[in-house]
Image (cartoon, rainbow, N blue to C red):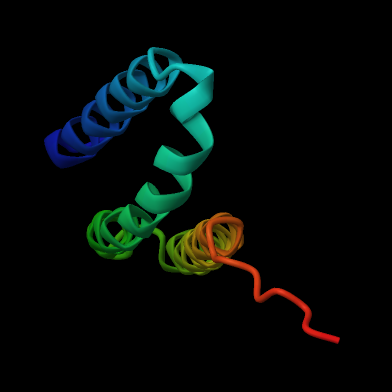
Length: 101
């Protein structure tokens, strides 16, 4: 493996550990609102994954293409799910119209 592959693997391992530590330290009361709003950051994750895979594409085009497609699908599901949860949470705070019969 080239040096760039070790650097990318190190970045992946470091970001995984930091993400785990950050999420573990969020109180459970704040976890759902915080995580549902922050799922939009999956767009940044998606861009990073595609850049890393474009570097790896030169050596292994088929594997990199499959991994890039999986990254796009998983990040899209995460973004849509995050906005869905946020939308449902915001609906809970809307005032209800009184029924006048």
